[in-house]
Image (cartoon, rainbow, N blue to C red):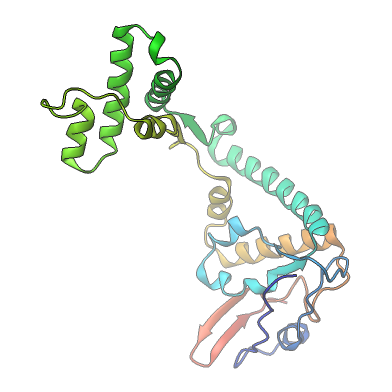
Length: 258
C-alpha cells in the first residue's frame, strides 16, 4: 500500500465554467485503490503523462500534474507502462527523423572512450596476469594506469606520488590493490555529445506553445483511458479537465478550454 494520500486541499478560488466535473474532482476524497481494477492491495504511482516529459514542461504545467498521477496495482501498471513506452518510442523516432534526418536514428546515446577503455584493460591485465607480462609491456601498462589515477586526483603531492610510485628514498612501489580496483572500475562508456534524448526532442517540438502542450497532455490522457479502461477513476476526473495552473493573488486559477 502506498504511504501517501492524495492532496485533498481545495484551491481558494477557481474559474467557474459550464463544466462542474473539475470542481467535483478537486473536492472529492480520492480512494486508495487501483483505478483500473479496484484492487486495494499493493499500489504504485502511474504518470499518465510520462515523467520524463513532465519534468521538461514549463513550471505552470508541473504544478497541476497531480490530476495526471493515478494509482495502479503492479499488474495494471505493467499494462499501462507498456502502452506508454510503445507510444514514446514511436513518437520520439518519428520526430527525431523529421527534425534531424534518418541518420539520427542510428546515433547511439553512449559511445566508448578508447582511452578509458585502454586504461581499464591495462588495469585488468595487471591484476590477472602481472607475473606473465613482459617487462616492457608491464611498464607501459603501469604508466597508463598511473597517469589515469593522477588525472582524477586533486592533491598535488598524492598525484606526484602516484606518477612516480613513491619518493626517491622509498623506491618505486607497485600500484596498490585499491588503486588497481579503481582503474578496473573505470566507466569507459560516456554520453554521446551528438545524441539528443528523445524526451528533449518531443518537448522542444511543442515550442512552448500552450495550445500544443494542452493537446499533448490531453492526448496522453486519451491513451490512458483507451489502454486501461479504468473503472475507479476519482469523481470528476475527465480527459478534458484543465491542464494548467496559474498562480494569482487570489490563489490558484485553472485554465480551462472546453
